Image (tube, rainbow, N blue to C red; front, side, top):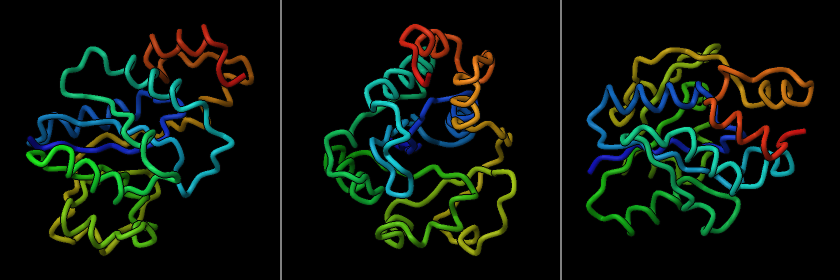
Length: 190
């Protein structure tokens, strides 16, 4: 089975994430796209993150009606901070019949060479790259194990959503409706 892995903190998951994942699932030969909820991204401050179980629950809520999308908390049980290569190695051992590829935004290509064992990720797994506003051309886009997908450019950030919540503004249409109710019900990000 071919699986696309969409790593992120999803703090919170928003419609931009959902559109990208669904577009990749529909326009590729993947059986599924898995959201890999990262407890701690080595490039981000962990203090700004909502508890990982709330973020995982919001992802599950957001994708509940789409059989091509799945969520995994696999990184919750791995050493922290989370490194993509370690997660890929673990998943490959756990699911030897699956082929995994990493889904990233074009803007992440600029820093990709700073990722732990990035050459192994390219060689053994490969990248699915979706367009992002302001991203420049990267020589990595011409690598044989990098596939560029045509996808809408949705310029929504989780930071913007969290700021809206803190300011008492509506986040309707920015997140899945059930995720919005979850956030309101638990008084998250206030």
